Image (cartoon, rainbow, N blue to C red; front, top):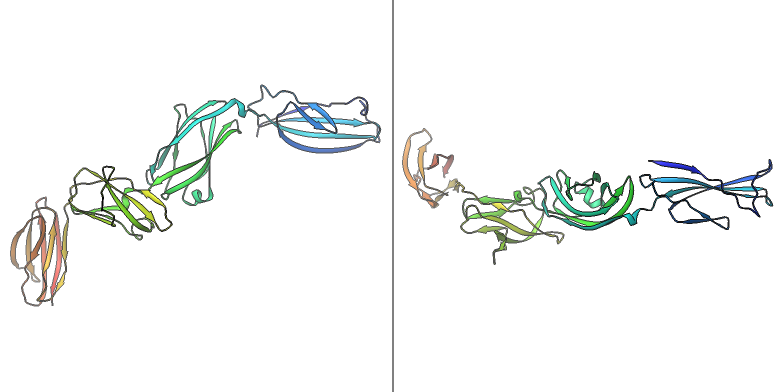
Length: 335
């Protein structure tokens, strides 16, 4: 804390004398104010020297003293004055870009004039519980204040943005920072399914309603936890999600990519059931018995394919190899 101590012994003629006797009683008091031209003390208006030139200090300390010869007393006031420089600084505008909760950085765009050399962010208790911490950063020269963070939960988090000039607050504004759900809450399955992961797999979010988007455009009627339709490779898929508190937020987009997926179900069957293998590209099936002998080889097309197992009870091995050489091996049981 930077302070300047200026001792002014101000005597008032008439009821106050310029000298103190040995029997005078001293009364001391303290006060802290923002600068003003005068200060009322013991019934008198005391002029306060201008703080010009001391704007870099947090406090300027004055001592005011009034001596009363009739009461044989000295009234001494220790006055701490904070230079009022708020009129010398101004926050013209502030805008904040929405950010993914897992990106690690959020940008605040500022237009500031006047005596400001630091920006302070003070977060609400809820925002701190979500993973944000109070911080003080130098005023950026390019107008973009970049705030680093780690492991922040998605949501709308409240903060107070303050401009400082050598620790003296010159302006403040309440702001909201919006952190979108990370794209990791979406999972692409095969080339025709997108799904929103559930509570145990999405970071602990409990979603109650869904609306899918493609390249920023709403997909009418697609309001389930999954999107089942041909996926356009390279397109951006996102969703507007509502959680169990009623909060609505978008996810960050997931860019669809070519998936080579292999799914076999069920893996246990009786004589009346079929076993289905779903692949996303051409593949071959190699079927073995438990001793490793090849029973059959067949080709699969993209989509659902039936695996023909012997009716004999036992354990069989299915190996599926796709055209890009991805391999999956599963044990199949016939009861």
